[in-house]
Image (cartoon, rainbow, N blue to C red):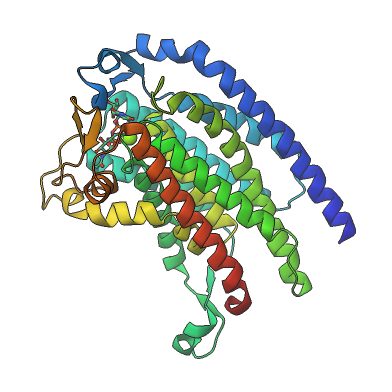
Length: 365
Ligand code: UD1
Ligand code: MG
């Protein structure tokens, strides 16, 4: 075990150094390359600043391509330092994230319709589905074991594959539709990434029987390998996307982010915890359903309205998302304030999720 810990530290140190490099390269590259996006026709107008000088400026769109590319490079290099024997699963996750970035960028370039947006992550999860050789059981929490006649593991078989595909579709789209104000897409991603990292760090050296212990260690290391470079490159993107945005992240980033979380959660087996971290996105998704399925008309953008006199955003109550709901509950806020409120709620949900996890460890297994 001592040897294993030493190897862990080597892998973690390599990851730390690569992530730090990834952060600084992303930070340097974005300002150098961003105008190329605008020149190529990839730009958007900052809707909530219309009428103000900034609202007329073309803001480069799909800049998430830069952190995503640097992320993929980090993951490639990190492979040189990996100890894990699950090379196939690692490759599968890597392929799905890469494919998702490609399709996300295609979406930004082609401006696809809603029904196609839903399908893209399903297509991108195929590399994982065909290469997946891991278990298809889920752990049943102790209080629910009366449903499985006392068994702690429930075999899901083909349903598990459907579950993996659905999780990829949910995570990607949930982030993409919780958006529209400066800093929100990348803000929520960075906070969730930090929560996932803390969750993994807390359990890197768990106690338990020997086989289980090795498996858990591999799982958490795997997740850290995927998430730490993501956290670093996204943080650099956040620097430019925060209010007032100098770049827009695009669907490239939203899909890249959601898919990275889905892969880490599926292959390191913590998807139930990830869903706790995704509570704001879940609320936003459920509240959005009437517009997503067309019962209530869904405009191209479901943003709040800017009151030019006060400079504050006001809720449009027929736009059913958490951004408008928050303004409806608390009252008008500036765009920056609103993003801080929503990011604080994200951090609160993640903290609760972590606390619940620590508490649940005592009765879950
Ligand atoms: C999703 C949302 C849409 C929201 C949009 C904002 C659903 C069903 N779709 O659509 O309601 O308006 O995200 O990203 O909920 N923009 C800003 N300020 C920002 C970020 C984006 O004005 O801080 C605008 C810009 O014009 C930018 C555009 O949104 O060009 C990007 O929209 P896009 O990501 O393509 O929209 P969707 O993901 O399709
Ligand atoms: Mg989007």
